[in-house]
Image (cartoon, rainbow over all chains, first blue to last red; front, side, top):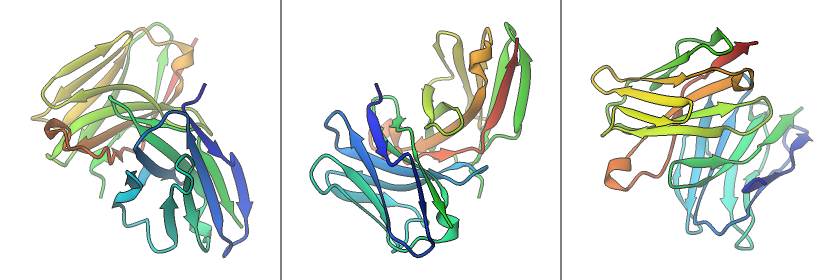
Length: 111
Length: 117
C-alpha cells in the first residue's frame, strides 16, 4: 500500500490553464517535497515544505507555482498558467529516516 | 550544472552476474548519497543510502561503495535478476552529518539497467 497517494495520475490541459496536483500522505508527516521529471531528463527538486511553510525552493519554482496544505492532510501543487514546458511527471515525496519516499507521480501533459 | 553524473546511460548484464552502476559528484559539500530505482510511469523507489562517514553499506543483494577522495560511488547488485531491470538514479544531498539535511536531492540522469535471462 503506497504511503503517498497522488492524484490525478494523468492530467491533460491546455496551455494557460491552471492545474492542481494533489498528494495525500497516509501517515502524519511534517516534511513534504515536490519533484518533477521532464521526459528523458533527470528528476529535479522543486520545493520543500515543512510545518506548513516553504522551507526551500528551486529556480524552477517561480511565481507560477504554489504549494499549500489546505486541510492539514492533502498537500497540493498549483501551476497557475501552464506552459508547454511544464509537461512532466510530478512527484510528491515525504521524508523518512533514510531519505525520501516518493509517490507514484502525476503525469501532466500541456497542449 | 551537473553536480551528480551518471556517465553510463545504459548497462546490460546477464542474470546471476554482478551489475555495477557508477556515479560521480562534484560538490564536496554532499555528505549523503542515495540510490533509487525507477520503472516507467512510477515514482523512484529508494534502494540504499550511505553517509560520507562510511565507505560501504550493504543491504541484501545491494552494496553501495563510496570513495570520497575520488568523489565516486557505485552500486553493486549481486546476483542480478531480470526484475532488477529499471533505471537507477544516484542522488546526493548535504547537511546530513549535522542533522540538518533538508533532503533537497540532486539527481543524476540515470542508468538503464537491463538484466537478461
